[in-house]
Amino acid sequence: MIQTSILQKISFFLILLLQLISQHIVLAQNPKPTEHVILISIDGFRTNFYLEEKWPAPNLQSMAKEGARSLGVTGVFPSVTYPSHTTIITGYPPAKHGIYYNAPFEPEGQTGKWYWENELIQVPTLWHAVRNDGMTSASFLWPVSVNAPIDYNLPEFWSLEGHGRIEPMREEETPKGLLAEMETNVLGKLNEKTFNGDYLNREDRIGDMAGYVLETYKPNLITLHLIATDHFQHSEGRDGLMVHKSVAATDRAIGKIMEAAERAGIMDKTTFIVTGDHGFVNIHSALSPNIWLVDAGLMENKDNRGNWKAAFHTSGASAFLHIRDKNDTQTVARVKKILDELPNSIKKLFRVVDRDELDKVGADPNAILALAPIRGISFSSSTKGEVLKPAKGGTHGYFPDFDEIETGFIAWGAGIRENVEVQEMGLVDVASVVKYLLNLSIELPESTLYPGIKK
Image (cartoon, rainbow, N blue to C red; front, side):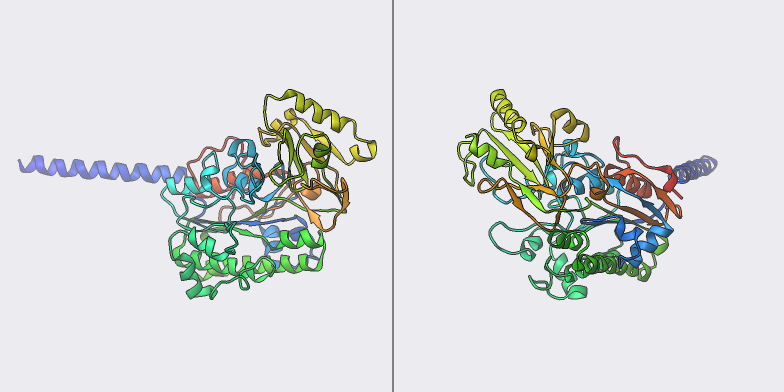
């Protein structure tokens, strides 16, 4: 009996040893190149900011030189914030992930709501993958992140009832009390003056938020959205004074997160990915296609579009045609005839993107067609006045087929090879880099990992 008991114990320990060896082999075959990924989106991020020394961005420029950098990232259509950010976090184009514009097309008139809720995304996200694989995540002001499976989350959200920006975000935070904790420990009390997109202090505070949570809770994935470069390129164009200052503020915010990783003693197992949603184009004129539809009796000059049959939904610089009755081929033919009969002086300002091309680029499957303007022209939602009006500043939303509308990409840190130049890549490809770095079990059939960036 004693010998049997000893043999059973030996057998048990042998089985346990074999299991441990097997687990070690699996881990050795599929290691995580890093423990922490900081995925930073700079709204309106251009490759100029890290490829040209005239821009005040020492952190970005040193990361680009030392790590992997892209000469241009092809975005989605329309090249606007919410569809683009959802492509970054899913690896799919808008037609697949379901976030077609910043604001959904609302048949009874635009209420002002945007695509805020994470459940509107129709495919799994990197946040889902991190949670499913037993890791933790944090996020700060990332679009379409309300109710997302994120452990420490302050989503981008605002009230339509005029309640400002701070309290609506506080109401949607996870866990409850996160913002108050950060206010006490690092931020100071937030209000409409100390956290306002019109001022560069907003970038500082987002950097402080991400740095605090990284140092305190050490999540495996942090996603954050910095907006100042977008805000000031809209008002001043690509090369305005405040654009230069906003690049400096953004770079400083990133530096705060880098310092937090050093203080936490995790810099050697942390990777930074910096990308964006779109580039920017200077504009001088705006075109209002809904005026053509009003003049043709296909919609009314009313907030709810009145008794409408067709309407153009503008998103950034471009416009997408929606039909009230999808079987109304007669109205579709009328709109196409209107476009075809425009004078050449107007027709040369844009091109019609047909349904086949929209399918190829992965745009809204509900749109009949789209109008993509030439550089310098932007489409407007206006339904009255002159069809062609003056405009100024800069914008985006263009069809993503030229350099100025491309965004950027930098990967630096653990798991990333040094001094790699990626000439071309797509926004859908960013997700595969995160998957590689954290060894996530998520399928990304439309996202390409370029093995040349792997260490």
